[in-house]
Image (cartoon, rainbow, N blue to C red; front, side, top):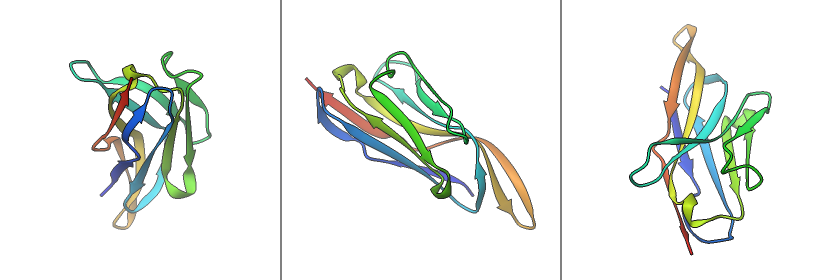
Length: 125
């Protein structure tokens, strides 16, 4: 019923910029906190940044000062603007929504912990 679809990944040179987008689709009434995670080869998935529906954001230390998370509630979309990129930013980036309320027949239904399929980001040195 609810899907998250990321876009915007690709190849970028060190020092460059990239913007990721993630749109939630379905019969959505409201999306609560959304965030970005990443998983590099051979490593565990880690938090990059999260943002509440009101726009309060939190960042991993590795992202502070270089990445900016934002969202458009009307479009159920979250963005991650990345600048000053480094080779160690190379990873698959995943979008997450912690709670999505959607129209399920004649009532509202809440689902939890939705993930996108991931988008690959490669930073060349």
